Image (cartoon, rainbow, N blue to C red; front, side, top):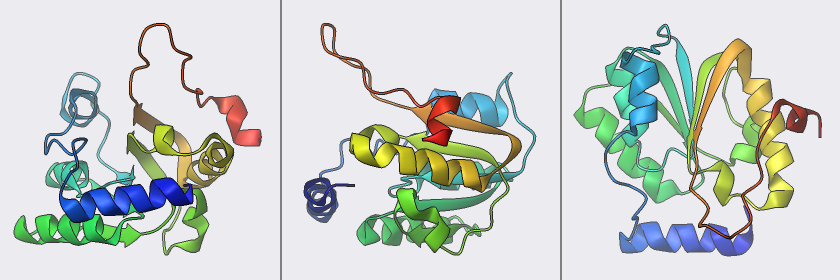
Length: 166
């Protein structure tokens, strides 16, 4: 994450201006947790978990979840949400492009990203791809909810299997 983005996100959390934090889990995640495309319960990694809305949601459905975000204030709020719900959830302050530095055991079944990847500078995206690949078990699911690009503008970079080798 660039220094400017890092400072901006920290400031926005400090001011309480977090328009991306709706407090509601996205329907795409609900579908893979409890819908027709339901995955077997396992271990999940919530990348850029913010205040833990989706992390806590997955834990209420029986998933063993770890949430990672680089903003300490967001992680404090996330821990309070999990505590209030009496859930055992691991929340870590850290950089998603350096997951190997955190006390996280690889072998996740589901990796969830709601707005994290597209917030990274393009130069950091290959490191993100390497790190999340290292965290998965064979056959894992990556669910990334990204912003839509306005008509007429260039599309954001797409993470594909080929990006893992960069």
